[in-house]
Every structure is written in structure tokens, then in C-alpha cells.
Length: 149
Ligand code: DQA
Image (cartoon, rainbow, N blue to C red; front, side, top):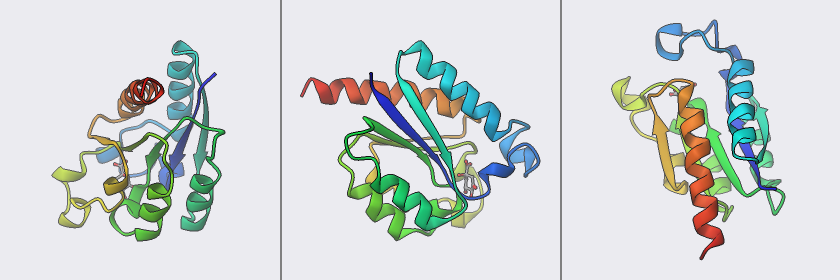
């Protein structure tokens, strides 16, 4: 059974209370349930992870090896700052999707540049919590097309 890793960066543990104009009222626990439900539909497993620490996010990416078939990541603010996270993502040869709840291209200038997106197959942003569901569907397609290489 395929297993995917869903990684969430800093401050995403505050969803539900945090800037609801951008992120809505959903909580990270609700997003986790949504992801688990979608993975169940596709008969795959997912591991959901959140950390406020750059190093922990990097080490989680390092741990992927052959235990996971793909990575979905919302690097949160590290999207715009972290070359270290970019390098960790680059070092993994698994399919990778970056996701953002808000449309980062419709916000402040400093959010309009994603450093980490250079290392991923594609980016989904601006669809709220549903972006995670879209990312799961998309990563399954990438995993399947990789298997048929
Ligand atoms: C975010 C967008 C980032 O700019 C921000 O720092 C976040 C959340 C999003 O999901 O929309 O923390 O990644």
C-alpha cells in the first residue's frame, strides 16, 4: 500500500484562530481528518506531521527514504525564506507537491516568491483546506505515472 507524508510548517498548528480572513475557520486537526478520509478513498495511507522548527521539517524530509511514495508540504513562512528546506526537498527523488491554503500570489510582495517550489513537481494554492484534497489526488497521479516509467 502506498504511503504519503503530509508536512506542515510553522504556525499551522494555530489554524482556526489565526488570520481567519486568509485561512478560514478550519483547524489542522480537521485538515488531518480530511486528508485521512481522502487517502482512505484511494486506499493509501498518510502520515500527517506539523512542526514549528525548520530543522525538524528538514529531518522529516530526510526520513522519507523508501517508506513513503510521495510528499505533500505546506512549508508555511519557510516557503519564502528557507534554502535549507529547498535543498532537503531537492535531495528527495519522490514526487512532491507544495500546497498553500491562501493564494500567496494575491498577498504581500514577500509572499509572492516561493523558494521551496523550485524542488517540487507542482504547487496548489488558494483553495483553502480543499487544496490538501486536490494535492492528494495530484500526488497519486504522479506516483502512478512514476510507477509506469
Ligand atoms: C501559507 C502561506 C504562507 O505565506 C504563510 O506564511 C503561512 C501559510 C498558506 O498555507 O497559505 O503560514 O503557507
